[in-house]
Length: 484
Length: 97
Image (cartoon, rainbow over all chains, first blue to last red; front, side, top):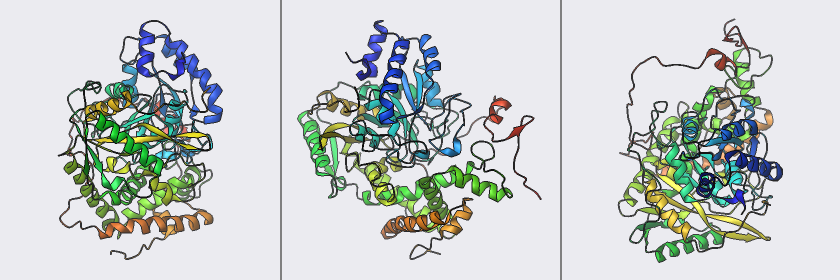
């Protein structure tokens, strides 16, 4: 048995049967990270001593008792460094736990390790980390996706059993797809954003990256719920997100949006997703062609709204209360301008500039307000579609993982990598990516992801369909090349 | 009011954003963001008359809470992350001349 390849659910039963202890699990992970991570670069840091202490006291009867969970560097864990992989926050230690982390602890889980990401979650390749690139465990010359690339690569490479990521325009689902794992973006408001370093507050959601659909549901069970620290967190009745797993999906209607099957998709991605649709049909689900007519505008709307919100959110990095401060400033303006110039990377600067521009006097109506109106139209497309279907199916990413450096100086090409994931954030609905095949290239098997989108707050249904596919998956699973 | 083509001046916007730029960055960002702005021009072809803007996807408005005193972080935890602090206070760059 390879302990490191187990799902959270499998690990849990071994823990409860006393076949393994939480401390042994931390030690096994620590050894795996030491052996593999030099080739992958998923972790920015980890504090094994603290994790061992927590493991020694872990109560395995709790829902996630004794399960270590890797944390994206944008999410606060009290006492640990937390910097959104930016130089501007180097040395910063979180003075409190994010609510999602506090809830993981309450469920018995052990936060373990800081996972790499694109700086401030701005990117689709994790190449924008100020510290290191992360490499795809299935082909180390390729990107793992982003921005939660460290989280996805760690789960894929056996360096984590599960991880938290954050998704503003696909940052959980796209790396999950490219690394062959499961990534769930909950509906907006399902999970408190308190303690998540903000990128775009109307779009950001924390969610799990896991090996199985069930594991994603277990983690969502732990982290969901109203939080007085985040007024956008929703006060909904308690749900067990795994409650529908295993139920027959016969008769469920799955929308196939014609706008998502366009020329320009890698033919191997197209073929894998179509095969998945046929498979769901063989399980009794009913594929229905639908239209989401405003799909083509989603990327443009997103890059106006997300950058506008980011320019406002990132104004807090002024070198006063925390973070990098330029030395010997010539007055306060010079202090601000140089601290920010020295602390932020290129992509962050580009987005702050774009966001500042679209909010500036004279351009607000033409760009920002117009984008918010088109956002309404995109949301209406989904509302209409969900009147006649239970879920929507499409690719997660138009291509498998691309090579490091291939798009890093072409922001527009990079932005188009998010073309299939962005609309879910704009509409506030939930979405999941799960493996549905591989694209063979030069002997490497590059994972392909299938995306399912669900009604807002209908995660239980989404997970039911995803699990039905996963449990009867019609392709042979392959281990990553990097894992021993 | 409504520009037909982007009139994006990277230096001026950088000043609004309190962001210094190197000459190389100014040239690169001007060109790269020009391309992005050209891409978003497509939104001008959408009919948005009588469409309300969406600020948040979930229809939740006016969330109130009790205006009650709550525990806050200890002062030493707050100043621990400041670039410069003294006597439990954050030392800042001179604001007034």
